Image (tube, rainbow, N blue to C red; front, side, top):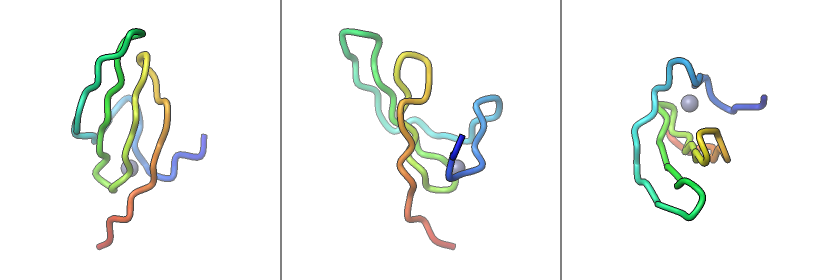
Length: 55
Ligand SMILES: [Zn+2]
């Protein structure tokens, strides 16, 4: 899986940004330590948005 970051489900280094309740379970937006935004949906990863964090 092309993560674009070193995050792993077993040891997530994510911080919850926000949660949006939906009719099918809800969507969570998390920010990885490397700057990537991780979008979780239905208990799994729905999308990864590479961040622009530098340094
Ligand atoms: Zn990461």
